[in-house]
Image (cartoon, rainbow, N blue to C red):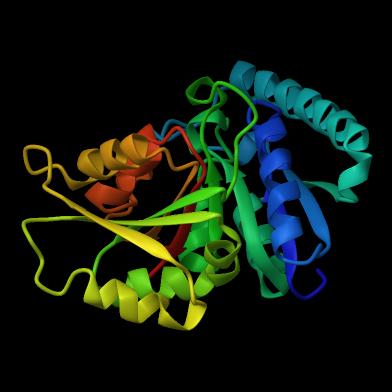
Length: 272
């Protein structure tokens, strides 16, 4: 892929339209880099469900039909979005392997929420974020959004004084600078370094940010962060992502997992 390109990884059309809206806005911020939409058709005979159940013959046949239908529907959708100038790429194989292959040229990856994806596609977010170490925009499930997502008009930064958060700020610097409004939210019990630590991280970007510190809700940092984001009216959230565990439902730290499961706006993620 061309250096600095945007990669959209799709398994079905469920979250595709929202991803294309976000990609269009992101491309404007990044100076209109090349965009590739990737659909790797899963190999049904080699697909294992999250429960570690091997697919039976009927399930294999059903998944093959599902993958073929998704491929045709996605191709039609991308063709209708001709103004995006995206390259459509479809192949059969293993999504994780293909993501690793194309990652060196990618500047930003855009993915739908894993819940919208069928077996064979649900590891994409983890692979892109932590293995390929790419900045990611996770687009929430369509049911969580009332319309096409707004993007980077009002950006909320979930602050934690850590190298992971600072890496997230660096990775998404153009998006922070492009936002009309930036709100930095720290969830904790009166961190003495806040907001000075956040101001230092944002200093080179020359943005006029506002700062808010909120207590956790019954110890739940992720829920408190999302509540604060909703109250301030942000349309995009930026966080550093922590990886824990190895199972599909336990790949992320508690805060990251809570945000991904419940966010109703696009989430910008940079991993450790």
